[in-house]
Length: 467
Image 1 (cartoon, rainbow, N blue to C red):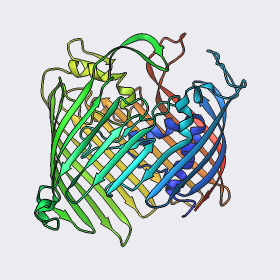
Image 2 (cartoon, rainbow, N blue to C red):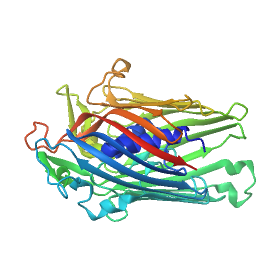
Image 3 (cartoon, helix red, strand yellow):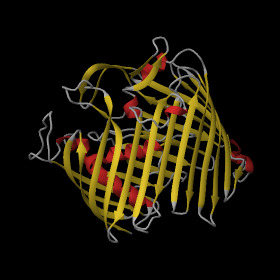
Image 4 (cartoon, rainbow, N blue to C red):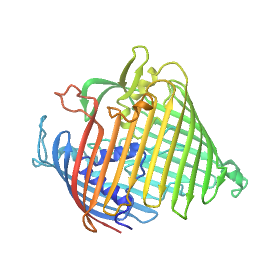
């Protein structure tokens, strides 16, 4: 494997920033739609400096990951040492080791970052640990869900899929030891019971059910409990849906799959999705193009792709427009469903991912609907082909109004830029700068108990051996 390949750049630099906020760097990449980069043969260590909550930390990372084809796993040991301690003061292990990293028994499970067996579409696919980009079906209910948004609380998630000629199942659980979000999709290929080799076996119908049984419905203003906004009332969010697809073309260079989904949120609205997915591959120049466009017709109290990359934050705080008062407010996502107006919405969602050889990858998605604060944008660019310096940039903005606000940096924006300079064959320098959403846990702050946008940075040096 080429040590200057894109996967090494992304994961190693992620770990470097991770010395300070590994999971936050992952958050931005996941929100922007970038593919997971953790499954490769690599042994690495690094030393870097950066901020967490305004305090300066030195971090030592030890990392090992391997992909044996059917089996892959990753191990990470982050040791964060506090160099400065601004108000509010923190009590650390030994006076320097960040206590929040190791104050829960589940924190020790993050050493084994993930274990994987098989790949999506195989007869059996299993992922245990960190879930990067969990999706069910066409992604109209669960789309790129990420279970570990919080640096201080590690969740051991589970994906278990079975895919056969006759049908299969896809499942997701956010945390094996304290599950709150779980669900699955079962699908059937009806013609397979007559002839598994027939063209008509490209027809599939599915049924999906997903629920967050402890979804926050109300939170106490200015209160924090166990590192989260204090929840005063819960209300389960359960979504059910049916889908149908037919792969009209399936060749080595082009596949086309039209589909339709009809979903309903129990106690709220219904959404209709009709789209087409195309995958184009030209092996001569190693060009890959994935494109999807989807029309959506939604009840006002329905949110498409409800369980998305940022659901673990949105379930506490989701922006919406109060149409009567003309104000922009925030509330738990489950409560917002009941405050979204009274008019049905027309809209669309489009996605494009373009990759040429190992030179660059560009991806973008955009969705927009009738009314205000209904636009979302994701963009990522990976450029691994330069000889000495590699570059990556990621951008995500949600719930904004109109294309004119797409690139205004505000509290609805996330971004990450990173660069790596290869000094020698295995030794490198890396830097990152990013904006993330973070819970304010300072009791003296006017934003205490709220999620606010925070700009952070990281600089580091490391060594890696790829195989």
